[in-house]
Image (cartoon, rainbow, N blue to C red; front, top):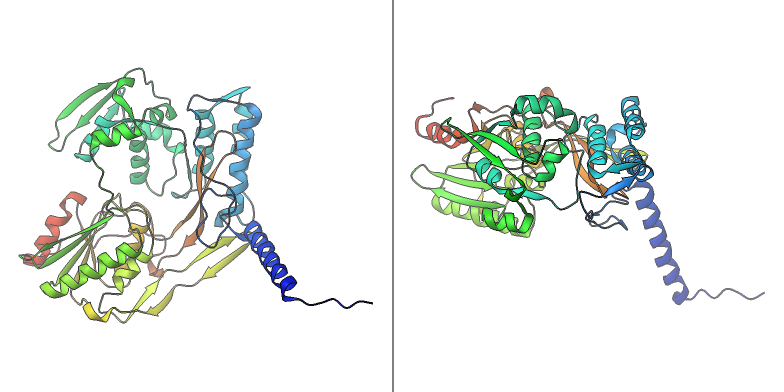
Length: 443
C-alpha cells in the first residue's frame, strides 16, 4: 500500500479551503450581517445595495407577501428581543397585512405594512424606508433649517396627523415621533406614504417670531436629489468643526455626526493642542444635530481628559441563536499625555440628539466628566443599536434591524432619558453656557 505523501503543496490549499468553509459557515449561522446590503470588515455578505425602479411599480400579491415574510425572517434572526421567536402581536399583524393585499399591491402598501409591523418592535433604530428615488420639497427643507414650524398640512394640524399616523413610525418618545412625521414632509413620496393628497399641498408655517405663513405646493415644487442639493446650497460634508472664544475662555467642537476615523483623530489631536496652547479652561461639545456615528468618537475625546478611569456601557449582541453579553465595566483611560485637559466640559443637546449623540452625552454625564446643557435627548441610553440593513427581494424596500442592546452606564438611571443638568431650549444652549461661564448662575 502506497503511503500518502504529505506535501506542503497539498496541505496549504487544504488549510485555505478549510478556513474559507469555516468562515462562510460562521457568517451564515452567527453573523447578523449575512445577507445584509453592507457588511463591515470581518463579516461576509453576498448582497449589495439596490435601488427600486419606481415608486409607481405594482407588485403581485405573492411578491408583496414574500417581502413581508422576508422582513419577518431577518427581524427574528437579528434583533436581540426575538431570540426566542417573534411575539404574537407581530405575527398576527403580519398575517392581517398579507390578507389585506389585493391581486396588485403598490410599493406604498408594502412600505406601510412593513413600517406598521416594525412599529410594534418599539425600537427607534428598527424601521423601514423606501429605496426608490425621491423628489424633495426644497422650500420646506429651507424653512425647517431657518427655524420655521409646521402648523397644519391640507387643513389638518400636525398633532392630528401624528395621531393618525404614529403607528407607521418607530420611536422612543413623542418628540421623536413628531420629528419622524415632519421628515416625511420633505418629499413627494413621503406625503404619499401618509396618503396625503399631493395634487395641491397647503402647509401653514409659523416663523421664529410667531407669524403665520401659508404656502401652496404642487408637483412642480419638488426636485430630484441632485437638483435639491444644489438649490439648498449645503455641500459641506464636514462632520466636525471647532471654534475658539478667548474672551470667554471657551473652545467649542460642533458635530454633525459622530464619525470615527483617522481624520477625526487628527482633528482632535490638533484641537486639544490648540486648547493647551491657548490655556483654554472650558470646552463645549455641541451634539444638538447628531443622530449617527460611533461610540469610539466619545472614547477618543475622553482620552484627552485628565481622568484616571471611565465606565463603558454594557449590553448584549445577537449572534444567530446565541446572545453575547458584556458587562458595564470600568477601564483605565489611555491618555494622550502631551495635551491633557483638566478644565470644565459641557455638552449641548437637543431633542434631535440621537443614537451616538446620546451615547456621547451619557459617557460624559454618567462618568461625571461634565455637565449637560439643553434639551432631553430624543432616545434613551438603554437602547437598541448597531443596525444591520436589508432589502426586500421584490419591492427593494430597505429596512434596518438592531443587533445589539446597550445598557446605561449609571444603572440607577436605567430606562431613563438623558436629563440636562441645565434645562433650556436647544437654541438657548449657547446663551446659557456663556451665562454659566460669566456669572456661575445655575439654570
